[in-house]
Length: 296
Image 1 (spheres, rainbow, N blue to C red):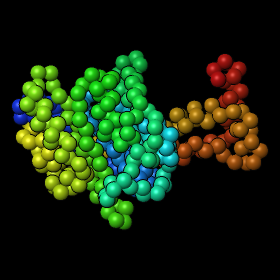
Image 2 (tube, rainbow, N blue to C red):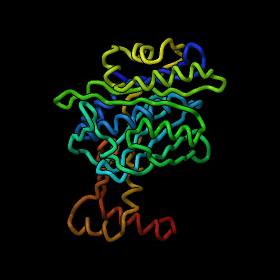
Image 3 (cartoon, rainbow, N blue to C red):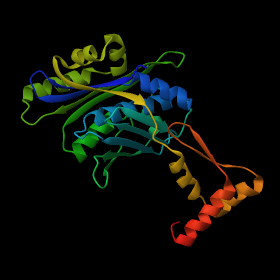
Image 4 (tube, rainbow, N blue to C red):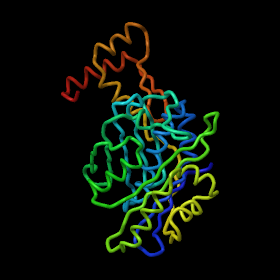
């Protein structure tokens, strides 16, 4: 099975760290799994590329990055989740939207996302995950991610992300580049990197044209010393136990209504679309037991 890739490297002069992403396999699968139209797929695809890049850069063996995009636009809520061991999953609450554009070949993500917040959750294996929340600058995601790094982690960064589609709506390419300036970088190198990133106006097209992730990044930024790679595939960690906990958290009256109608209680995972079904009579028995124990 083809997997998405994240490459980690340094610019030849050592002034910046580079994370290059090819998320095409995962984004293509997400589009099919959730039945997404082009614009919601572009939103989720960019968010997924960002989550993969950040997860690949964690310095722990078993870590996870979750990005939550909460805008007031019609796209609603989008979540991308990626683990250091190469597992990823994601969803967006609105599956179909018109293909709004802001120019030839430019999807209008800002109109779809609206105003809101980007939340970054890092699970580093500590007692509690590290959470940060920043206001969205544009809803285009790349600019919002760079703003997060500048405000929450004090790391000067530049980011370019994109998802490219055929006229029929097929995903042709998906990915991008995240560049982070290192302490001690020369003004000359910083200026050169800024110039190169500004010139990268269509990263998904450049990625498709380059033919490989390495060639894409090096054409964009010049010589890169590659340090490592993480490959990602879609995978969900939902379980019957987790779904049962959600079912048990439902109001007792709602569970009883399912029983009256002779219907099972269904819990569907937003990430993988798997449906879990439970007997309402047994759920009510368990609810009563938990309430008796003070555990609900």
